[in-house]
Each structure stands twice: as C-alpha cells, then as structure tokens.
Amino acid sequence: MEKIKMTTPLVEMDGDEMTRILWAMIKDKLILPFVDLKTEYYDLSLLHRNETKDQVTVDAANATKKYGVAVKCATITPNKQRMEEYPQLTEMWKSPNGTIRSILDGTVFRTPICIDAIKPVVKNWKKPITIARHAYGDVYKSVDFVTEKPGTCTMTFKSDDGTEEKTVTVQKTDGPTVWQGAHNKDKSIRSFARSCFQYALDTKQDLWFSTKDTIAKVYDGEFKKIFEEEFEGYKAKFEELGITYFYTLIDDAVARVIRSQGGYIWACKNYDGDVMSDMVSTAFGSLAMMTSVLVAPDGTTEYEAAHGTVTKHYYKHLKGEKTSTNSMATIFAWSGALRKRGELDGLAGLADYANKLEEACFDALNAGIMTKDLVGLVEPGFEARAVNSEEFLDAIAERLAKKLG
Ligand code: NAP
Ligand code: MG
Image 1 (cartoon, rainbow, N blue to C red):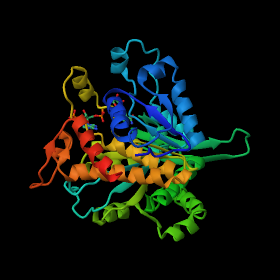
Image 2: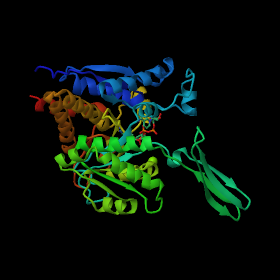
Image 3: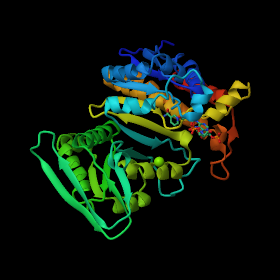
C-alpha cells in the first residue's frame, strides 16, 4: 500500500512520562505504517524544556502560528515535588499549556469521546457536549482583601494619559468585610468570541453562550455585547452551515444542558467553564476519554488529550510492569490534527485516514477491547475485556489496516 502523502508539516510537541511512551507507540503502530508523516518536531519533555530554558515551548508555539496546526503530548508542569524529583531543574518552569495558550491567544475546547457501552450519567445525552472556557481574568486575576472597621470602599480607574478617570463606591460597610476587584479585557473577550465562532464553524455545531447579565449588567453585559458584535462577522457562514448562535442566561443554560441531547458547544466565562467542564466531563465518564483543542481567533489549532502524563502508570512501566493506559484521547489528538491538516491542504486522503483511525478505535471498543479504566464503566451486560496499553493499540492497528485496504 502506498503511504498517504502530506504537504505541510504538522507541529509535533512531544511530552513526558506515560503519555510520551504512548506517543511513540501510537506513531509506530497507527500512523507511520500508513502516513508519510511530515512533522516539525519539538521535544517539550521537562528536561529538554529545562535545557533550552523553556525556549522550546515558545518555539513550538510560534511554529504552530506559522503552520496553523499542532498536536501535543501531555507534559509535566513542575511543582515543588517535581523540583525534588528532578534536582537538575534550574527553574520551576511555567505550564507549557499556559505559555502556548497565551502566545496563541487561544481558547480551550474540551469534548468527551462517547461510546454506546458507556452511558453518560445524564441519560438523555446522546452526543458530546463541548465546553469552551474563557481562560483570562475575572476572579482568576482579581485582587481581594479583608477589612475590620466600618468604612467605605471605592474603586478608581485612572488612564495613563490622565484623560479618563472614574470612581465608584463599592459599598459603605458597618464592620468586618471581604472585598474583591476583578477585571476582564475587551481584547481577550473578543478573542474568546472569535475562537468560539471559529470552532463552531470547524465542527459544524451550534454555539451556546451564557452569562449572568441580569445581575452583572455592565460586566457580563460587556461579554454579551462583544459576542453579538463579533457574531456579525460569522453570521453568513453560520447560516450557510445551518448552525446557530444562541445566547441565554447561565441558569437557563444549565437547565437546557441537562435536558438536551448534547451535540453543541457551550461557551462559558472563566469560572463557569472551570466548574461546568468538571461537571460535564465527570457526567460523560472518564478523563481518559476527553480531548482538548486550543483554538486561536485566527483558526490556528492545537490538539491534545485533556489528561496529564499519567505518572503512576509510568512508574509501573519503568519497573517493567505492563500498564493498561488508555490512549484514546491522545490518538484523537493525532486524528484531529491530521484531519485539520488534510482539510487545510485539500488532502482528502489524509482526512479520510483520520476518520478511519477514529472508526478503528470505536470498532475496538465496541468489540469490548478496552483499557482497565473503561472496563469498570461499561453498561451491565456489555462484555468487556481489559487489555494492556500495547494490546489496545494493536487491536486498533489491525482494524485500521483492514479499513485502509
Ligand atoms: P493525570 O496524568 O491525568 O492522571 C491522574 C489519574 O487519572 C491517573 O493516575 C489515572 O488513574 C487516571 N488517568 C488519567 N489519564 C489516564 C489514561 N489515559 N488512561 C488511564 N488512566 C488515566 O493527572 P495527574 O496525575 O494529576 O498529573 C500528572 C502530571 O500531568 C502532572 O505533572 C501534571 O503537571 C501533568 N498534567 C499535564 C497536563 C497537560 O499537559 N495537558 C494536564 C494535566 C496534568 P489511576 O492511577 O487510578 O489508574
Ligand atoms: Mg475545574
């Protein structure tokens, strides 16, 4: 069989621990035998980030901007404990995902991979629900303090050039009080809106957006207004695809989400997205079945798994023990990226390969071949067999080879 050709390279960001092991296995078993893979490779493993003083992360993000599509392996974000584990680290390097997100000015979209044998906790959910979380500002960049005495708190803005000044009384208080000052930037909200509209077009799904603008009339009202303004630029394309943009109050959104069948993108403000993404992902089943896509306002896209480096499994692997680590989300990161590359470059064969790779994954799972984490989640009566990390990939490879003739 002739291998499927690529024209533009895909930005490939390798990572750490168990997911790095899976990464190499996925390439060897599922991609390289079928695709003449063209990537620009960046090693984002912790020690290589350390050696390059984290320049490699910045370079990888810039390459993503240049080529438009990237696939990323999970990486360690060092903390105190990691600093002890890796004494050679010269700095507690920042989260690579944070660095890449800020360079691309992107929004993260998380989508569960659903199979019939694992029913969501919410029984009417038939299709995945994608959560888009705005990742800048509000309570995450707020300042707060506690005061003891009766008094008045005011909030003042002064422009650098002295031409704009505003003061409001936050509250006059009669005793101990806790205060908070939060902000968001027009530019960030606008980028968030564009990434959401862009991703809705890419995935041909309706976009929902919710805030609490009946209470935070100015603050959340600004979000609502900016989304409406930005939507003007996408309206025609939405109509063409027959998808809709729908704004509603967060309370109403929560009720509708629970009663819905799924199959749309739900855009949330920073805090709402933090909370709702945990709720939705738990209700759908497993973190190991959750994909994560970073989308920039200009459509630049980076695909990855939502889970981390699966440290515990890695230590078992190092001891020579067999692991049963679920590679679904990492495989779907690759298929997502290759499909996108195929669509951008007009390579129908590459996009078709990506679809078949995903079908082969579903075929293996539907045949009851799964990793341990999923076996415990299947419906009663469904016969599932726990296999190890490698056997799972082999089962997919076998099915993929058949599909590709
Ligand atoms: P984790 O790697 O997601 O793993 C937590 C636990 O979830 C695992 O121990 C495992 O449970 C289960 N799990 C996660 N993914 C799985 C998979 N694919 N197959 C089977 N089970 C899976 O989270 P963590 O242990 O909190 O973090 C480990 C490292 O990952 C940290 O250094 C963190 O900085 C990094 N991290 C990176 C990213 C990223 O790059 N996007 C995201 C999150 C965390 P059992 O042990 O019970 O089997
Ligand atoms: Mg959370």
